[in-house]
Amino acid sequence: QAGVILQFQITTFGEGERLIVARDVTRVHNLEQMRQDFVANVSHELRTPLTVIKGYLETFMDSLQEDHPQLSRGLHRMNEQALRMEALVNDLLLLSRLETDNSQQLIKPVGIPKLLRQIYHDAQAMNETKQHNIILEVDEDLDINGDHEELRSAFSNLVINAIKYAPAKSNITIRWNEDENGVYMEVEDDGDGIDPKHLPRLTERFYRADQSRHAKTGGTGLGLAIVKHVLIHHNAKLEIFSELGEGCVFTCHFPRKNIVPKAQKSVA
Ligand code: ADP
Image (cartoon, rainbow, N blue to C red; front, side, top):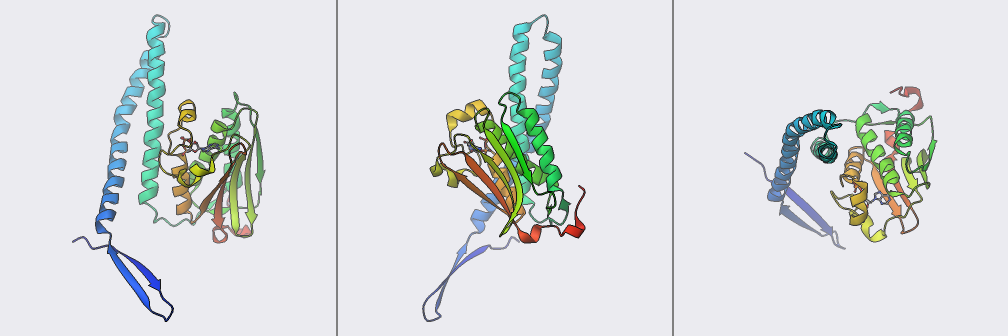
């Protein structure tokens, strides 16, 4: 027998009086659960046909290259779109997992300086055409407890966005340091920035600040939604600062309690 889910709202008045409103949100909760299950199932089911399609495309592309150049070009386009769909399916699956499986305790030390160095090297490799000046400012002694793969996804999404959206030859800085509230990872770029009116909705699935620009950059539209959910899982918060023409700063704030004491430092 399914239970009833109630949401309480408590308002306190001057003389210690309280108004308590209880709302039955069972239906809303069940619908949300159905939506999450549906997205997870569809994404999962799409994986097998996609793998088969990609397999055939690769075989045909190789064998038709010389004798049928026009057909081969068409197959390359199809392969590009299949890869794009695969990225989308993978992001949807990751997002579904993050939405449903928040129970796991995050007690494993993650070697963040090493992880950020890897992301930095991957970014340099991606960066050949745009030649950004990527700067890494990392406190080597600082680690947190968390999930290595989730943090890799979140941090690389922020760095890849800076590479995608900031114009060629601009500066991108990746920071990892302590402040008065805890510890933060930050990606700053000096690109075109985002109109502040978009900022409150930027972490919604498929929300884009500039539709036309997106067509050229080819992301899945799920990157910042993934960042947000990874941070929720780590009791952390995403702060976005931007003005048009002033670049962007994306900061992930982690609470002090996540910091690994120096004696216990990880080698991961
Ligand atoms: P996408 O796949 O479209 O990049 P994201 O969720 O990662 O999806 O980002 C959402 C939107 O936020 C992007 O479409 C873009 O408009 C804006 N955005 C994200 N990062 C930056 C950045 N560094 N500079 C300018 N705009 C950005």
